[in-house]
Amino acid sequence: MSLPATAPLAALPHPLPLCPNARALLFAMRRMGAHGLADARAAHAIFTLFREGFRRPLTLLRALMADLATSAAMPIAIAPCCCARMTTAEAGLLAAIGQVDTTPDKAALLLSDLLGLRRADGVLASVAALAAAFADEGRPIGV
Image (cartoon, rainbow, N blue to C red; front, top):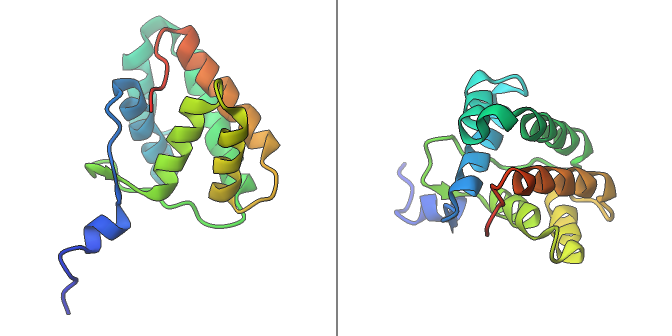
């Protein structure tokens, strides 16, 4: 049985972000989501992006991924690293990270939907810390 030609678009409805910082973050999140928090390729991607200032963003990304895994009330769909499109969950997470500084209420709603929780304050704090780490190093996440 073959799938209809629109099946990949239904599973991956969002294009990759235009922001190179968001693309690097998405790659690292996909690697950690599939291969664990200590994935060497994810760490290398963050190191390549930040050079000497890589420790804080990498540590906060690992903390966020752990928070997502322990807080989620439902599965979070991630695509393989090679996919040229994003899942709805990935797009929502990147949107929350990119908007947490300007519209924290919207970011909180996005995270609540993503996690299947009424309140996602702990994860929101992790998202804000990660967004600040990227911005402080001159690599803000654009959405």
